[in-house]
Length: 152
Image (cartoon, rainbow, N blue to C red):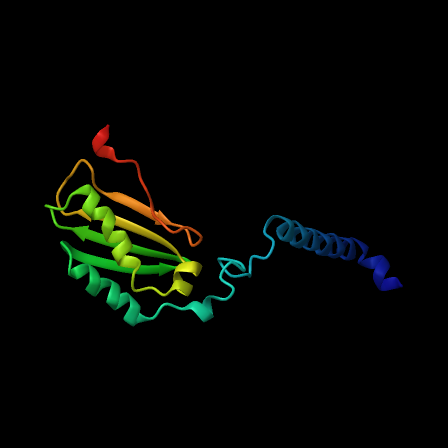
């Protein structure tokens, strides 16, 4: 008892400090809940069953190399497959839009039903109507394109 009487201010300071730390932890958990969870949360559940193989990506590049395309890049980010196509300078806008459908042909129906697709079509030179971006949601059958800038 004598020890507590002599060090009562130190004990009070330690208790206040511990309460302050506990309060900070509660406030942090309130403002930043589940900070240890995955970046995409549970949106990627089941992705292991529908993984896209490297051979499918190579098949996409091979299929587009048969067209007037100088290069193709395929990147998978979560549930989105991004396909970047660099078309030759003589390619028209309507022809470039058909490359999106050709690019997703190698994917299985299961993959098309799980992933969203974004297709970026650009040219090496400056063009008024390029680049164009097409997006296909996993529940849709066709691409939606950015506004045609050549008509402005």
